[in-house]
Amino acid sequence: AQKVTQAQTEISVVEKEDVTLDCVYETRDTTYYLFWYKQPPSGELVFLIRRNSFDEQNEISGRYSWNFQKSTSSFNFTITASQVVDSAVYFCALNGAGGTSYGKLTFGQGTILTVHP
Amino acid sequence: DAGVIQSPRHEVTEMGQEVTLRCKPISGHDYLFWYRQTMMRGLELLIYFNNNVPIDDSGMPEDRFSAKMPNASFSTLKIQPSEPRDSAVYFCASSRTETYEQYFGPGTRLTVT
Image (tube, rainbow over all chains, first blue to last red):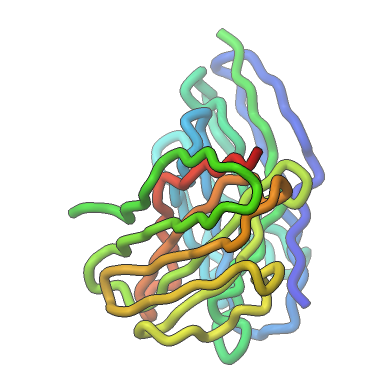
């Protein structure tokens, strides 16, 4: 069975602070994919990033960066110099790569991020 | 390119009525997924299709729920009869085999009174 845990239910920061959202996962698949999605107040789910299990390079995209550590089964997401527009619910998700695991995008419970001006 | 399209965006119906939710995936995507989001249960995968064929419907809550994909550009999720506990946001998503990235539609907010 797959499981994704986002231990932080809610985080509140002031604009320009850095914030890290934690994600820990469990899977028996040897190949798998990890994702982060953003759900702003408008309700849609926006794809942010995909990371393959065999690629442990960290990634940076503008103010966003992701730290994947297979040894600790973690895939953490950092927003640098947060802005009010970053306020949203952020979901970490896991997808097994093959067989009956494919398509079973298992989501964490989400972290509500509020950025205050 | 157009994203995943869902209709209606909002649906309010009375208990016992039939509800049909519609989805048009991104052109060229061969996988289509239906999810439900509630405060209590979070995001749940209900069913998914590959090349219009249902692959896994183990997440469908009960026989009142059914889903079809008659062609590559259209899918429906039907609830008959609807109950108040079906109230949720229903998302449709699509992806291509090679990327595993699922792109979501705007969702349908269903309220059953």
